[in-house]
Amino acid sequence: MIARKRALVERRTAREACRWSDGDTTRLWGEELPVRVVEAPSSRAERVEAKDGQLTLFVAKRWLGDSDQAVAHRERLAQAWVHSQLAEALPALFARHEAVMGVHASDVRLRTMKSRWGSCNVKSGAITLNTRLVGYPRHCLEYVVVHELCHLLEPSHNARFHTLMDRYYPAWREARQDLRA
Ligand SMILES: [Zn+2]
Image (cartoon, rainbow, N blue to C red; front, side):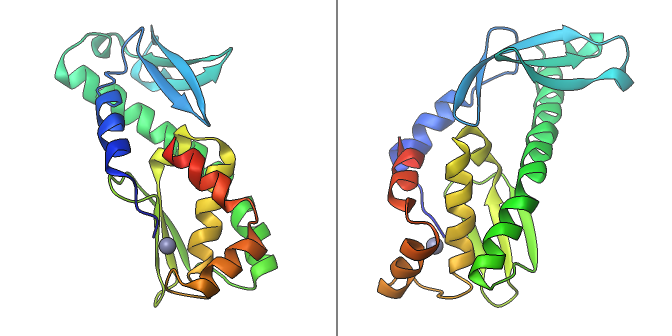
């Protein structure tokens, strides 16, 4: 697993006071994007769109306001979208590295976590990734994927583990730095 620095957690917590309202900002693949909220013609037409340097939430009229329910609704919509972004990026990433490393993750799960970027259940072969990775440059996601796959070869963070990381993801130190920045 990859632990996060406490200061970072606190900074992110402050940032995540994001209420998904007009004028808020969010991060997508390392870029800071302004959030726009636009009225959708109906509930069924609700969607999220990242385009022209901004993230637009199209929501039904009753979810436009600043009530806790409206904020929670927009948060759910945004989270579902984040999941879809990750779900889109992950299969190719896993396929590529699994082929080279000769390992296979039995299951890949996404969770919003406070204290780790990812984890690997060595016994079952299941890997869990933090949905917050969507806010960081894409190579950070790749680094965490390779890190967790490495645990299928070596459970602990020992010298052998680092040798494996050097072999399968030579730029891992830079990526780790970017995750802390
Ligand atoms: Zn680890």
